[in-house]
Image (cartoon, one colour):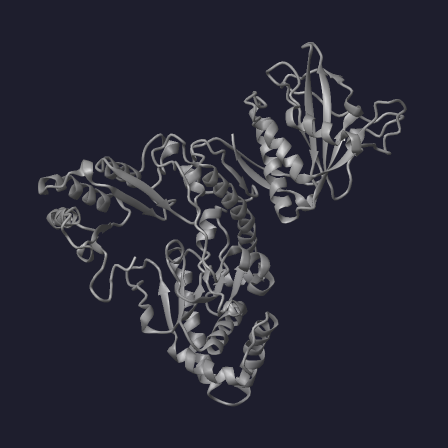
Length: 605
């Protein structure tokens, strides 16, 4: 924002965590902005920054309540309230108790004090904001998705296109060694620290840093801080002293770290030349433990050194910028598996294209997998939100859909207040959409329409050994057309009723979302679309749960419906059914997704 302009002509008047006694100063600045005769260069927008906790928020509310006494007409005062890290702290964390949390209540009181305001939520992890109750006053109305600038290296760069270069997975035994270390530093820490010092010596300019995140426990953080200091001191001394001890250090630690950087594509100076620089860089590197212990100064004065090693846990997650982060050592497991929390640990994302070939991360294998899953989750979520923004759809009407393995949770349970289905579309097994619709008549809709378009090119499946004209037919159809037909069936454009059973709608949405994600990666994918018995209706009796058994089983002349699929290809069977006792027809659908395309999906109920 340029609050601290070098020439003194800042466009902002900043008030940090103000008290009620500052109301007159705030009012005076607001009044000056409303003076039509004030030259533009003297105008300063009023900016109030406040910590997101109940006491401080209420002080700002009390200050605002005092402004009318100093001549400010709040009804005519436009205010922009920006909630940074909006998925954290401000949302109601007591919905499960039918209550409100203190910070949430304070935010509502602040908003009530501002009759003319816009509440803008800013976050990189919006899962929690999207899964609160739609009637909640903090449930967003609209969205704007920001696009990173040139040179940004994020999840796709580090965990998709350059994953093999960036990620060093800790084996279970290595992770266990790292998490239980008390007296001796683990070998993986030595390798990571050596990689950082070599990268620092190679670049030799700009600020660079290493992050060591072993655990949420402060005891282990302190232990690792001591490890890094001890190793650094010992290495500095050994590298300055020729002899067998130095040779052993280089052979066992620095040479493998050097080769790893070279193998990843980095153009490196000769190792011996770098080691001379490493010795000096060790001396210039600040090593700091950053956590909430009372006797630890957690402030980082970045200008004090061009090289840092920070050791910590949760305090180094959300909102903490690790400048020039090059090397990460994180044996910590994913814990509760909340993807928004795990993503906030990704301090290594940023504008690093100038030195991305030097970046490395030693990660617990489960954590690495979580980041990889998050790349696909975020990609699809961004696309859905971009489409909603472009279409001008209110987020109150937008159907929540996320590609997310059930191993992981979208966010903390305490804030979720929306019904959703979260399950895995499993590979190499049949799934049925077989519930009898509430409305009379066929419910084929767009899928029936799709078959009518491809029926002319369909052929009788050779695996159907039955005689007669009503044999199974198959047609290969572009996956994108199938996805479109599924979505049109669930939400017909002509306004006709969608499939009534929530479970059926959820299944269709889950399959459509998963297939859309796969076809985005490979537009050439197809689906084998089957018309079972060539569209001849089969009679079925509904069971107590309101569904019917769609497939026909094995007989002397027929393999059975379960055998009509092709290895590695998504299969979709259309079953026309006459519901016995109800004098009505329905379309049932069975899906089979190959294992390579399977995945987890979350959809709003």
